[in-house]
Image 1 (cartoon, rainbow over the protein chains, first blue to last red):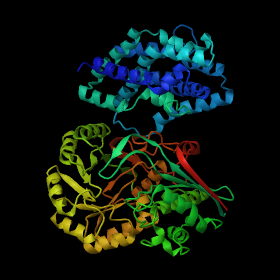
Image 2 (image 1 turned 45 degrees about the vertical axis):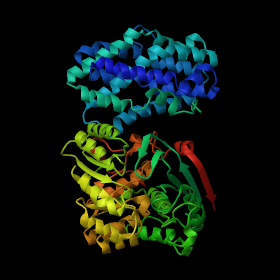
Image 3 (image 1 turned 180 degrees about the vertical axis):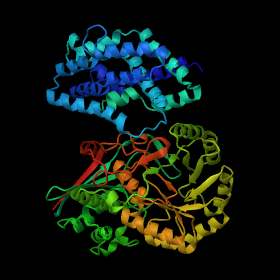
Image 4 (image 1 turned 135 degrees about the vertical axis):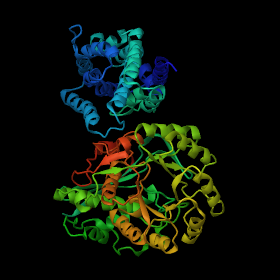
Length: 232
Length: 398
């Protein structure tokens, strides 16, 4: 088993299953109600608002061969790479443009930080940071992989069905611009991580199965934290 | 402070994956969470998980009992208050088990559930939910933890993993996943055609040092049970839970003599009378105590006392699909009863897609979980999630 191939296979499966799910299709075709688009936006915010913190954690445990790329992603997330707004700020602007008021934004902020709180407070299932770090790296890379393929489509669907302007959807078009090769570089980081920490194929496969035992995109974007049950 | 409102939430929380054993396959939780309120704002939460094949209670009959006979008995009464004396659970028992309706007793025709259900042996899931809600509320009011009632005798609780897989391949995979979490004590659901292959796959994946036990949920006939247990004993099994269906304790006692594996009573052990009959017949090596099955802390402690005096060892089991509320109660009991050989539960979001408590009540690496210290049962309940996952909400006010 080549690690990059196996991980790419899982990422592809997850991405295709999400894009072909009835929930995503209903959103894309306009069959969903406005509240479902709002819920998608809310879930996106809850999922990605803590991304700079997640990247910082990954940078802290990055293997030497992958540290530069994670650092580059971290700087991008924080808006320090090209003088742009931070990615959480881009998302925040999208939600405000969609009509989220300050009270609702505050609620979402609290919910998104609850994930970080959980990461710090919940008992750890894995025995070492090495294993937990791999699970987090796999999940973060999977989102990057998926967004490089679907973010523009999500931006289009929100533009069309929520009547949002292009400049409000910068987060989506930014992620869509990340080319597929860029997303594939994440696979090299995963390989470097496994090599640096001496993680064997069997252990990687185990953690892959555990991390992706359900569709993480569906879970995060459509499944919880909001009212989207667009598959119904 | 008088009890003035009861709300029962019948939940339907999807599982991460279906949980299968010899008698049932479940894809979602079917707990009942009870919220009890006083006129001055005191609130307590409790939980019960009705199982028709265990106590005879179904979700429907349990809701009827909670909002009917139980609420008639509780409404308008004073909520007991905290005291250091050891009789607090007895005072709750006076409220819950009072003589208002003699038909509550096991075997009475009036206690039968809906058509097709088993007769109700005891309203233990309902009782458990209310006992926990009463305790949670009164402890919160006093700024106390359930640990003040049941002082912990250990700092952390070690949980077992449970494997309920229909194929050897899936069982081996689950064992590997649990191994990644450092869990070396496993219970395997058996009773299917491939049970030997399933157990073999788990042994292979978990390694020779893992502690394995099996649970047939009463799937074996008395005639075949000894033979099937002998086959599984080859894989090094520490205990066999409920190999044959609940019945005369003497039949289980006969099997115990022939079995190469020590036996545990689960479905056979619902009431204190069951426990006494099992002890008298010398029918088992272990009792499986479960809060919802046995009716809450009070009855579980009574069974634990019986087991201790009879030299029967104990496990604290759980209910598949229980939320963090019942898991928290289980954590307190497990911390208090340090002689428990095995403890199950606290699966949290390893099984449930989402839990209703704000902080996870889930075990960590090695199955270890800390003693809970917060007020009441030690968990905060997210009522928004209760409402989201409720398929029925029944309210009664005084």
